[in-house]
Length: 302
Image (tube, rainbow, N blue to C red):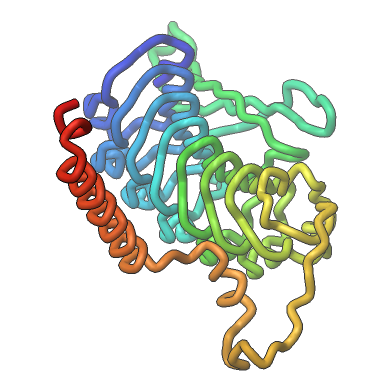
């Protein structure tokens, strides 16, 4: 089902989600808004899910984790908020089996090291009477990644309003080749376990609120340039120009405090103390203003 590039608006219709035989659902570049219905889990045979460029909001539903046949998923350029579901690490992004090829691929073009491939999905082989011909119904969708798209595992959550740290469980996506988390409000450190993603070719966390030291430049992380990390003012280390300041032992700091705890305290706020001081200041100002009006009849009259 291809509805991309129109001006459809309104909540996502549940009628789109009533077929367990659907292989491709592409509603990119429309004006759909609201949350993704929980009934998305009913698309049990879905291989391609493309929601990019709409106004979808709310949290990313955990029901997406039940799409155990999914190959490609693009949720970028929406208004999703909250945390990334930890269960994303259990999505298999199933590889193409030799005996069951719902999608074949053919290269279209190569530009600047990036290759565009076209998926040709064989939906059904129909046997027809002898005086007719046998034919394949095909489905085509374009998706851009770096280098070879064979058995690709790609996750794009960019251009949303996602918050909180990057889940450490993303390190379980051992076959992922493209991970794009840019243009969100993610915070905290980049999980060190991501260094184990040996097949990662494309990685960007640009324009978030991440802090701390960038992962060591070794293996595949030695290939990512500053553009993968830009827009995070509290990140430091190569390939960025900002040098990480070494934390020395101080007698004023307890020795049991970890590095992560020290780095995580710069933005902490005691909300109880904040609201108590705010209310106290407001009441003091209000009574002071009333006292002035009580003392000065001219001001009171005015």
